[in-house]
Length: 194
Length: 194
Image (cartoon, rainbow over all chains, first blue to last red; front, top):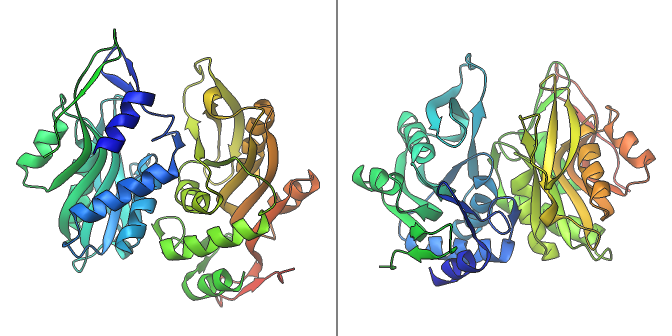
């Protein structure tokens, strides 16, 4: 999506260690009119899927998911990161390994809010190693719901997450796929849109 | 706000220990059309304030803040909860005491995203002891920005937060103020709207 690529080129900052900082518009400060454009684009790409619910994960996915949900006219559920080992009974749970934070945590969703009747779209701001999306997909499976697909704003195409998700047969739509980036020059190359 | 009060009466669950569960529409599953109505209402109540930025705190405030921001046509910044004691230089920081989780944590906002030119509206889903709003207000003060006010969806009127915030001279708008609630009968009494 050209609009998003241009914004990443303009305001993204490339750092050593494959870090792309987009916190001026995506995941710390949030540009709501941009989110609306992303929402319209996701709606186009998943228009025929009869989605009933959007599922995301706290914290930085929530804002985008809520704006996107307006275009699908469905509720958002966000999975909570749980620090406690002992989780109360009425939740679906799965495990997520975070490379960024070097730890493993459980994510939970109340059983009230996800069920066999649901057709679920996953939304997140970033896709790198794919662990968060895999965790969310596991929650959908546990609930007996239908996983319609996943939409992310930015995919780091040089990390394994995108391939992992696509190989599992999940319909993944990434609005901008970073193919490579150079911390010395700040140059960012995107995978061409299909 | 009648619409919100009716929704709390219909879908809220009162539990022992002053707990009001509204996670079916406010802070786990999120009803986006309802959020839009709350956004319109906040916009009416702060219409003349020339707000330039909405500030909230992760995680459950983010969704509401993003929807509300559409009506003000301003960006959202969310304060991050930090677990690390040593925080990198370029952030404003303040301390929040959480009664719910029985711990103290730091909240941070990058200095890039809050400055003297900003007129800031705080948005959060819940107000109980007021510690989160106080922490956010301290960030605004640290940044030299102007705190225009605070908007919360639900205030627990029988806890000290609302009084605390109002006594500090902060323009607080709570869309529903729970005066009392009874876990035995499930009955909820609201403070009359002005």
